[in-house]
Length: 428
Image (cartoon, rainbow, N blue to C red; front, side, top):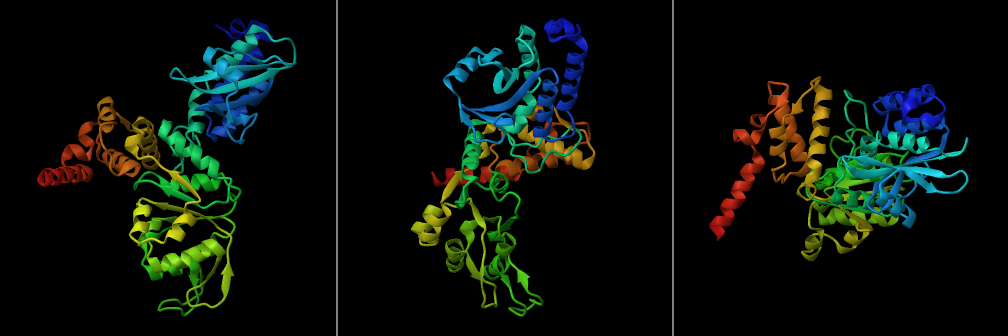
């Protein structure tokens, strides 16, 4: 069946057929999701459907991805839009002149977004609505990528290592919190277990802040002794200590105008907490071995897996520093709270492994079922390491159950779980 048979009122088969062919090609082009969605709107405009917009449905709100309201904060659904989505069919959204047409974007039967446009060249015909619905049905995978925070690269290229993958309610709630705090200047405290992706969330917040074009600097506070941490954060003068042959700028100076992530903030000593508090309150510090007071304007994001409240009660963490850090707390869910994201995460990590190693591996169905059963006490980091290890060991084109460490008695998480169970049984 040709395009004119599908859309007889649109003025001929060739323009519609050509535009649909280009739209289909653009969906898998080697370009970011936003660029591909904008290309779709530009091609629709050649058919007279102008002022287009593509938005993702996030709970009870729409977030613009391309065209209308792109980049704006999510907008709550109006009663008209709620009724439109409840009907679930393409049609007229608003009856102004010219009218606005809309079509729900679906993926696996679920409405994930909205495609809207206006037709001003002539009276709206039924084929215009069918055309919009036809294109909307092609956009589901791209909208899901955008909604998950992925950059969307073409098959064969390595997926974005900074992508936050998933579409579970728990993850969407954390992303919504991150989006709300990103435009502010408040310090952010990322809370969550080890391996949940706190560094990715910090990058996500920085990239959506007014400081996005400035440096994003990160440091793991638990990896350094107190003296080394002070030198790393504040810098040092030449001769300040053995081996200090030159003056060195610290991480705070490097982050001036931008954002600094202090990971594992709960591990810093009480003595260093006082020095850090001064930087947060006054934006002032001295290099190690220096006397000159330096000023810095850096937004602070702190991250921890510790129970800071318990540390404050035990007088191991300063209460005044705790309150400074908690300007905008964001809790990141453990993987067990978002198990429905495991298949998408597995595909993402495997695609990265394939791109990095020139492979074309896939998970067989039984392996996919198996990875859903794991408790993952190490969260996303454990899932990634688990998949990479299995991918490296497999000898075929598919990763099977036998390729995983847990099936070979080498799974550290399983050993930890058995040890915990043994301790509980002994205690009872």
